[in-house]
Length: 539
Image: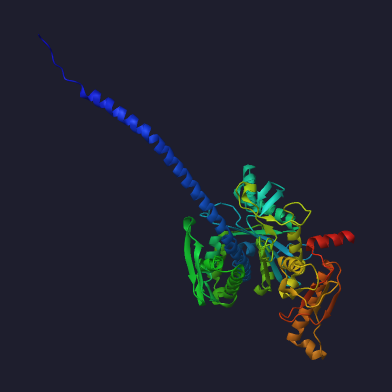
């Protein structure tokens, strides 16, 4: 029997086996791949949430730091332009004449400027105005500057150009729309700043004349250009959660005592707030501003034309404004007569005193549940009873008091509120209301006697004994303070329902108040905007 033999193709069997193995592995791996994708998605969402939380925390810090930069920059810009114009090195002005232009003013003689702060090119959220501050300059009567900081998360229910907006997005969106309509970037930016000023002025019921915009780099470089600043740190400062790069934290610390700060350190010193209060942080702002202005005016820096030119070049690259150079020269002339101690700095916040929280000046906002706004963190004005949500009546009144009664906020008369028979807790409600409007309440307590009627009292007038006493600087200052206290007491008496008001010995001496409000059995708490509105209607 014959037969043949042939080699078996082992490669076909091997190939089939490999395909089956691969198919088996793929089938098994599908659930693992799906699980891995889900884990990665969850990880990504978690990282995004962490970034958002850090971004929100850093936004609070940026309000402080850029706000300080704005405050400092306006002084340095004015000072450097004034010096450059004086020595004839500012060529554009020299060519057209160095005569200053007339500053724009409102009917009260105030020049109102919107200050905007943004990050530099490396900062996330290009063109988002992380800082918004309204500065009102009174160059004649009080020689003061009002500065009101508006938080970036404030919600605007209705804007003229964009509808519903978060306020820090408005400039960016206006600029984008103008560019889409054919405007160049510079022209669009200038027009967007003007439109933003008009929007904020409309909400605050005030006229805003011009806009200044600066970034972080401008602040740091300006401090470095003047050779840093020398300050005295009152106590050790250790912040273990200072915002670092890529959404991280780092530790910033500085020891008590005399310190020399460069630009980067000065910025951190101004921004840090984790281990300190807003009050101490505001004090550090004023400290840095005063140190920088003092360095500009008192050191040999101002005698070096090269230094001044370099400083101006730094600011010109980091500052954008709707003002002309001649207007800045006029502003510089005003600044020459200004004292940094006459800067009245306030900010809107959610420290509203409601639901057991502590009231603070400017505490007219609250944070609604995120679920109502698509998960976004926003702030809305606290509304009085019967008014629409987001009503600005309290904020408008606050700004009006700041603008037109600056001496109250400069002298800060001490106020005591005494409950002499009114409903329990009503004196605290009134005290919180006064605190929110920036008044200096030093005491809230029960009075040992019951009173039927509510009344207001201010400290007795300072006794004057002849011409020598009237020429004594201390005596004159005391007389002026007493006049301010009397004026403020008269306002309270009228605002609270045309109450009796008189001079006399204060009813409590624990804190030496200059104004005492006694709430009697007839007292019923009503917010100041409601009271003043009702009075206007009655009149």
